[in-house]
Length: 156
Ligand code: HEC
Image (cartoon, rainbow, N blue to C red; front, side):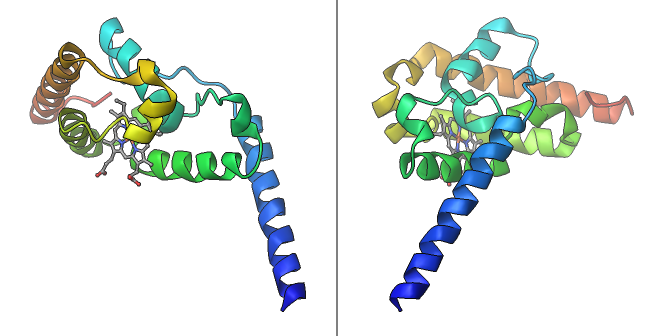
């Protein structure tokens, strides 16, 4: 039993090390990979979302040390499986529209950025104007994508 625990623990450590190494090897891409041309919106996304929803994670010092690094890794992995701003240009127009709707809902309901993140990064908190800006950006971007689909144009 104890042996199984030790082996289990070692596997977890090895897996975490592999994740850290693979993460470090990722190339640095621009965050706003076609997400938005609006610099004000881009800077809000960069400030409040990119740590979790992109491959541009800036880690606090403790974020490199287990077990905090494991928690961050699983959070980032979950976040990126839903929305990865670094991969924006690879989403289909339909996916983009769905994600934009979800961004609008999550931001307006103060679900994103998560409270636990704001607690550690108070500057990530969105003001009412910033929420309004994100919301109107999601609307106009969705409208643009829909128009593009109707005219048969290529979605970005
Ligand atoms: C601390 C990391 C973190 C930050 C910062 C963060 N998110 Fe998230 N986000 C997550 C996680 C984790 C999930 C996955 C859902 C879950 O497990 O709660 C998620 C899910 C989402 C989803 C998908 C929700 C769904 O129901 O499919 C959207 C949209 C989203 N986030 C938008 C944003 C936006 C916009 C920002 C910036 C304003 C932001 N997030 C900031 C961690 C984060």
